[in-house]
Amino acid sequence: MARRPRSGPTLWPVSGRLIDSFGRVHRDLRISVTDRCNFRCRYCMPAEGLEWLPREELLTFEEIERVARLLVEDYGVESIRLTGGEPTVRARLTTLVGMLSRLPADLCLTTNGATLETMAAPLAEAGLKRINVSLDSLRRDRFEELTLRDGLPAVLAGIDGAIEVGLDPVKVNVVVMRGVNDDEVLSFARFGREHGVVVRFIEFMPLDADEAWSDSAVVTQEEIVGIIGEEFPLVPVERTSAPATRFRYEDGAGEFGVVASVTRKFCDTCDRVRLTADGQFRNCLFAVDEFDLRGLLRSGAADAEIGEMFERAVGAKWAGHGIGTVNFIRPARSMSQIGG
View 1 (cartoon, rainbow, N blue to C red):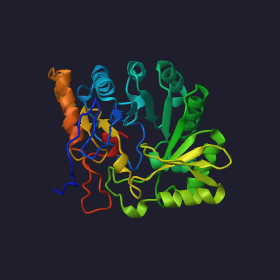
View 2 (tube, rainbow, N blue to C red):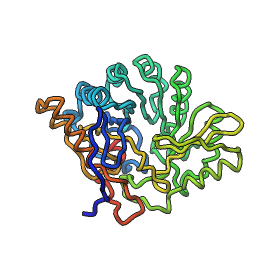
View 3 (tube, one colour):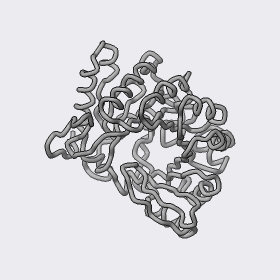
View 4 (tube, rainbow, N blue to C red):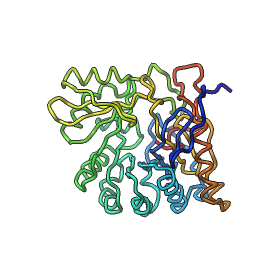
């Protein structure tokens, strides 16, 4: 099996940080709380759905909190994002949000927004500060075609609800696919400006469950920025370790971002690690290897032993995912199984 190149000295951990052999400090934790979803988005899972994990294979809230606490308090993780599947289908999600909100880390949630109108207030009361809503079309007929659900009105109401309860920022994630929704790029830009939300356009990545991805379906950052820039003068924002390259509108009406994982890889600044719903620790969205944290947690492992696994996992991280090269190896799991 081909492997991505690794070189240089082993640097982890240093001063309570997870630093890989390329000098990247890992500060961002993505936690999938469920593999289940109430949509069937075409790039995420097949129309007939997937076989859901049995409940007993999911990490408990106490197990999730323990992992998060160790990473925050012992290794300096600064940001936690809850994902799925669709995280709001996990029962008593606000309980978990309340547990994690007590940690000294920024807490965020990514949702499809289907139930957000009623959940926004309880989530905010539990301690959630900001939220991302996945939305790939502003056309009701196309939304239903993409998700196999007539849910656009509910999602739009959910975005309004998140704004009303003070979640800030509210971001809207749009996976742009050629010949599917690329004609809505400008519509989404206008939507973001008018509603005061940050739209993040995401290049289509090879994590679709049907494995139908091809590079010809990718609408590039250059194309997206070009479309918007023809209508609204733009000013580039200095890039950080966040996945999106940001642009603000010259007239002051907010900003948008582009996550260009395919055409403008940002692996050299990646600071993310991931925990799947069934307790597998991943050092990259496109990793082909996983580290069994659930097994450790349920066998009575001490915190130090769990920390050693974090260190091994980050130490094994590749230089980059290799999309578009002969070294690319597609992960065995789809996006819904890994967590966004």
